Length: 100
Image 1 (tube, rainbow, N blue to C red):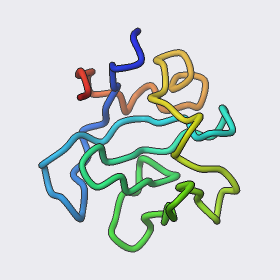
Image 2: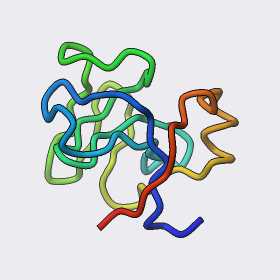
Image 3: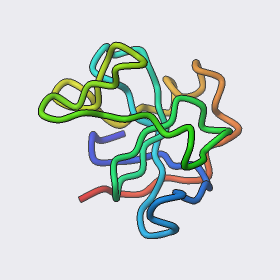
């Protein structure tokens, strides 16, 4: 899988609607997986519970997520299928797409 491939869940973003995809993303600690909207960059720790009230906040300039102690900035990337399966989210993978 190339770094530009995003494995996504069939979940609508409560902020963007269906504008972008919600992909599995590895934070900069290289172990924490979040579901992230590729349109507004809102992350969720639990991809089974995506709501406007439980979205995490990634703060610029380094895009750290205070609640997790890691971030979605430099050193983070789209998760591989193996990483998603290891995290127990394989059943949520709806497909894959190329990112810009």
